[in-house]
Image (cartoon, rainbow over all chains, first blue to last red; front, side, top):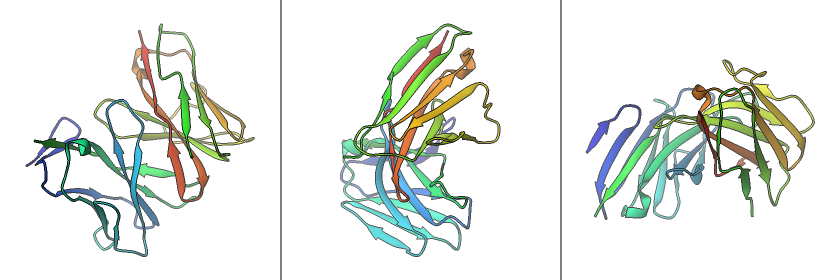
Length: 113
Length: 114
């Protein structure tokens, strides 16, 4: 199930299930979106990206969906494994150059055996 | 390839002292580096954009005189937290861009101010 913690919502899933993590972005002019995975005490790790001229992109066990109409991004993880437990952030690149990224609030994924 | 390192990985200092954090791109040149701050259970907040050879651009609300950024070479940017106070305790993360669509993050530096 999904719950809202003090600052970070948590998604709890059983090992082997599919996970869907959602993100609402803020800038309709953003042209590039990235999903990152962050484990405790570490920096963000790139998972998958998508440009604004696409609505779906698939990687290994992961799929990103982009709905520009409602400014919504989702990350689907197939056959979730305990090693997928982490905090997941979406990030958008807005206008203004320099590849500046704005991060979403993040979702903690907890995978239970 | 595309490794970004930070030093130190953690630091504890007394209130009122200054702390310098280094961010290095080990196997590529980065014309632009970014500094983020992350409080517990929160997201990454962009502090500043650092371009080699020029002054850093700070985000709204970030004190440029408190968070000094130097980007003297294409592989090194430093963040100095001056006169640190307990509220500056946080996880500081840098990133470096190899190209427009490639941004690589460092492992972060945990700063604790007593």
